[in-house]
Image: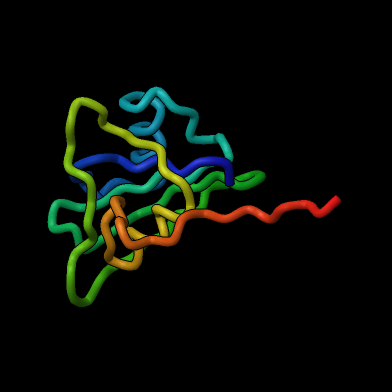
Length: 112
């Protein structure tokens, strides 16, 4: 998986794989067959669908919260934003994308 693309605002989650793939292609001008995740949220912000192409077919992941809502980014001029896996994890855990208390990413140093 290379990138995570979030559809800002709400999406009609009655759409199936084909409908979401068309949305990715036509409205976002992105390739639904790329090694990316395309994430969509409903108006009530309690359901998500994730579209993912792998080898020879699509995966469609669905998540429904029993309580609470996702802290989903509102629709603005850009209808899609690209985030990392870490930010996606925050959203799935009910947190916002702007985590002020999150630890910064640390990479290992090579000792010479």
